[in-house]
Length: 214
Image (cartoon, rainbow, N blue to C red; front, side, top):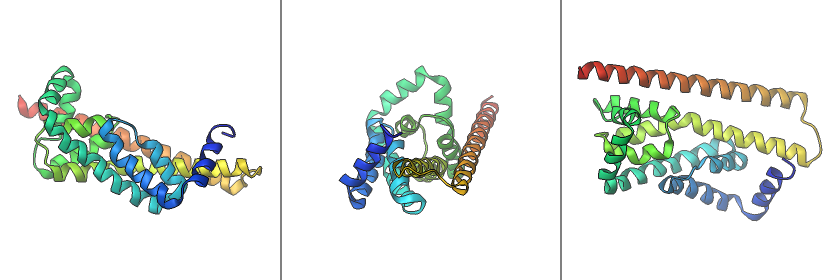
């Protein structure tokens, strides 16, 4: 941490103002998905710099753009996306699940897909291969991304706390250690439970769809 993370944090804080950092974070979270690049490190920076409140508002606004642009760009490559899905029938069945039923069913399926380990940037483009509407797609994506956003913000805050303690050459107090350990355990446990639930519900929806098609 002393040789890698702390220098980066200090360089970031000394080089950019909070306004510039906000623009960089917003821009990267909004545009990286178009290039199939991960935006989680930018969410860490949001946690380090802005905390939960402003950090969440900044990220959720950028996510709305980050999931919308690939959705509309994907229409230009819809035929190729269909060909790709034909080569991966298991993943295709999950993706097509989101396009079934009414708006609420689509919203629910998309939220579960976002919570599950299904690749975030891939689904942004492949969603257009289904009949899912933009409204359910956007709302389901925002709701489903909330757990990941809070985990990323918490990670950034935790890294900043540890980096500050290491730089100032003092140990964390007992209460700080307990708070960080308990917070980490709660965050990880909640994430695992939500992810497992989402995977189970997706499997149930797939089975229900299979029965209807028989």
